[in-house]
Image (cartoon, rainbow, N blue to C red; front, side):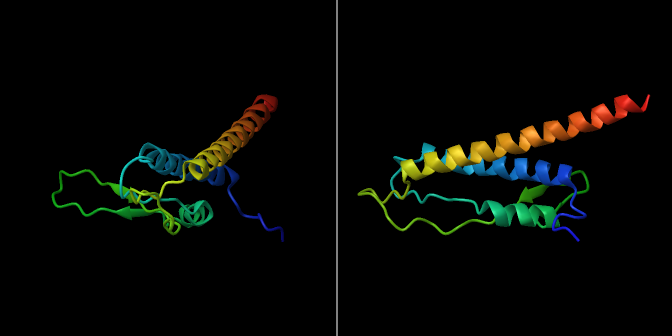
Length: 131
């Protein structure tokens, strides 16, 4: 039995893109607050969050108080530990580290998007050859 047997690759790639998009927002927020006093940088544990998403444990349903309310879920990521070092204003954002994370995360997203595009091209090609 192969390690990836039974894995829906389309779902894996879509969930990976969702986690990368969420991670992008967290990193952008850290960069935007690089000069904010007493700001603690947050970071997402990509692998753990993706694992939770694939298991279906990535969302928390919010309580509806009236029947007319729309059903809504909130994203529940796995965060890594906070930074320990800080600048004189107690800001804990390391801009170089955040830019490295941004580049790495962008690469992940582009890779997943490219693989998903290839997957759909294969399906389209297969369907066109049936005729």
